[in-house]
Length: 92
Image: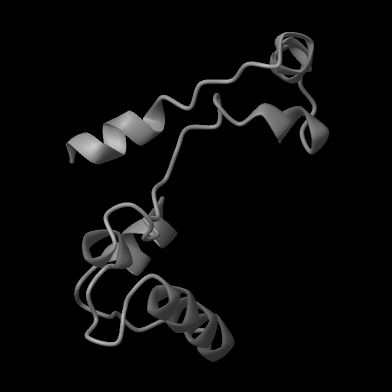
């Protein structure tokens, strides 16, 4: 969550690890246009918006964590998946 806050903030903050700071600045730059405006504001139907989401809607989580694969099996069986957090982003 702190990475999302850092990349979405208007003020750039410093990082102790120089390489990490370079990587974060590159990620932040990819979310903004030449005039430092967020791309989701410039291109409402196509810009990028970074957001932290809870682990529960991530269907592939069971591939990297020790947990039951119930969600991914349900999605594969039904071939339906609703991403409800996108609606939450649009309200902000």
